[in-house]
Length: 390
Image (cartoon, rainbow, N blue to C red; front, side, top):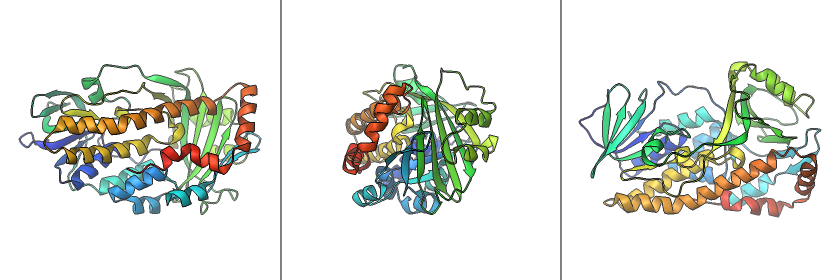
């Protein structure tokens, strides 16, 4: 049961990466925090997640970077190829690591969630609590949950993902924007001598309106993803996922068919990929948003989790800076975060258009350009993202 007689400093809805990170950051500043999650357990099912240099530096400040490095796999190889195997891009990952002081890492998302949750103070997380609605007055907000329970807090943070119920309570409804492609994601135990586990990293293959990615994520596991241009609703049944993926990538280069074939059907997830038009304001009164609840983005820059964690640290700092003025704290949080995440949302959408090209002539021009880009330009193009430190 929820203790309704005790008012929290902060209640957080959603125990994903952003919500747990926010709780850690606030507890570092001495706040009394609870995280409410609708699921009855944090299940061991998910996909891989890339943690680029800016994410690793954020994890360092949350005190869990070493555990993440041990559980994940460093990206020491990152290629882009054509379906027949021609090399288009060999990313300068070692130069990037030297520049930023760390490699990027890939990790199984549930492992990251577990590492973060173990950093929380005991009894911070409350499972099986489905948020319904909120009310607020001058000095508190009240969160109502399914079953008639409620909790009061001075601040409520909506970290409940792309379909956020907290968001529905504080901002005007906005339409989800379908990206034009759906994603298949799989986890497999797989070995290939061309991409040894000790080297880490992997490759992407870009074809006509579809692409495939392969990456090590630690503990002998490989994460792979498929992005296929398709009308909305094409893959909603979720049936025969392995067969569909194999049909789309039949005859493609390297280990693609093998790694899909070694994956159990139950270890393949299918999702339509969406974002939203960026908001300029994330808070109303004593309620604010964080991560995908505030700024859902396409995965094409690999920044969804990183930006949620950056949100968490900046929000905690703003609350510490204005301990007696919540409106100033939440306004400052938006001033610092909205421009950056808006640019990343827009950049991710632009990258999607380039990656998912269907026109053969446009693809030929793109591929010719990719082959000649010097390492310095590759690094500079992403420096504003990867070189950022909260």
